[in-house]
Image (cartoon, rainbow, N blue to C red; front, side, top):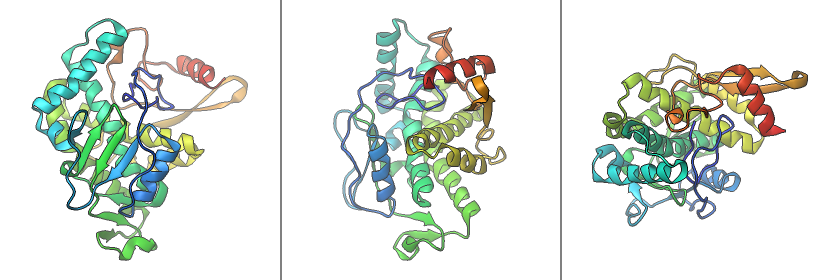
Amino acid sequence: MTVPAALPASPAAPAHVSGSPAGEPGATAGSPVAPAYARLAEVFPGLTVRESGATGPAPRGAGWVGAAELAAGGAALDGFLAWDEAQVLRDYGRQARPDVIASFGLHRYAWPACLLFTAPWFLSRRVPRLPVERVAFHRTLGRMSVRVEEFACLPSDPAAALPGARVVADEEALRAEVRAAVAQHVAPVLEGFGPRMRRGRRALWGMVTDEVAEGIWYIASLLGEEARATAELALLLPGSTAPYTGGAGFRTLTGPGGRELPTRDRASCCLFYTVRSEDTCVTCPRTCDADRVARLTATTA
């Protein structure tokens, strides 16, 4: 799968997208999910999440785009996708189809956007609610601005007594909160991108399934917790949780000397093969297991 500009490839894929990471470390002091965002920035400086106050305006200016603007599907989305079109032409010397450009653009937004929910869940068992009106994105700097007004947590969480807390019964209920919070944010964004992508609803939600799984899978690998992430993602995305298409899809291949190599089967295709036919993502359904083993072994040699 392609990865967003300024963000490295996940363990599942080569870095098809170029860009220079930048951003300010850490998140501003704020909501109960702020420590998780700070930890995310520490381990992955390519993405900085900053919180705005309840009355503070969302960032504006060159490079910033509101999630609600992307959802509207107008001029802001045109400008967002123009960056992708120029990047493909610059890096690969050819133009991509408009639906491919739209697919790249959605991925480059959804990959970090899903981390707004999955990182606090994975790191601190807290799940914010972030409608599109409360999120802005500056992708060339790897920054996201959010306004957190409510979050879900477990009864044992010290934050359960804080304003904005919504206490849920158990781990499965918290997983349901992750799925619901991601869906609440992403569904309007799909309305903006969808008409340009020439894909049906199932394929679009397959992309979201992949972004949820592969984003936190990558972050967990940086934290040395990849095994925990694959186990927890299997519970989060068991394959029967509409609107998500398919499950987490993790499995293990056997490499040289009996070495175990984690991989997953994507629920969607990023269409990068239409730009460079000989190069597919390592988790792409088009990539056979023998090729996956060879590439995973070469990557970690």
